Image 1 (tube, rainbow, N blue to C red):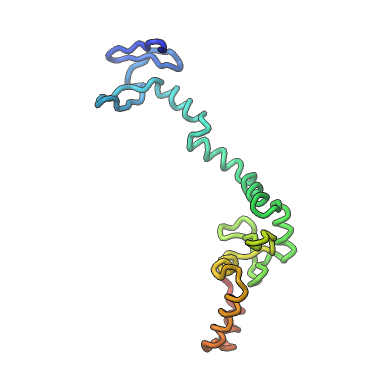
Image 2 (cartoon, rainbow, N blue to C red):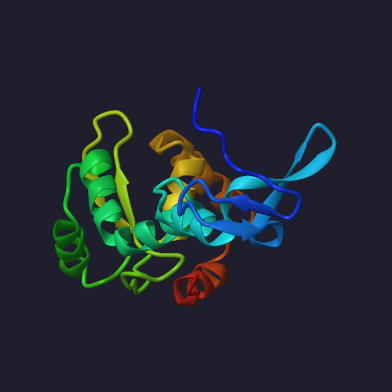
Length: 170
């Protein structure tokens, strides 16, 4: 059993800094229906909490500092490419979506997606969000895409609409 901590009616000894302090300088917790001070004073408690790697504030700062590292690791793990290779791929496509030709910019919220074959995991190119989601909706199945084209053409899809689509920027 550990050392007994001195507690009086209005003071308590912090188990970290070992100073006797007033109860108001301790956070309180419920214990058997009573509010009792925690074992460390507010100053020591906050210091320990902020140094703890499991603390949310610490994790957020640590994660923000390492965001680029995590992006790089995700690219390597998921697609087997580095961030510089992704940038080179985008540049080789003249910073445009490989399907709709929309201009793309790295770092935008609705950004630049690495498209890959879900069976072979081979990277195919860089797409905008809409085209990436479109392929995903059709499960990367060319038969579904051909049927969608046939459907549009069979249902009064005119040349005038096609011209409007070509000028349409997502």
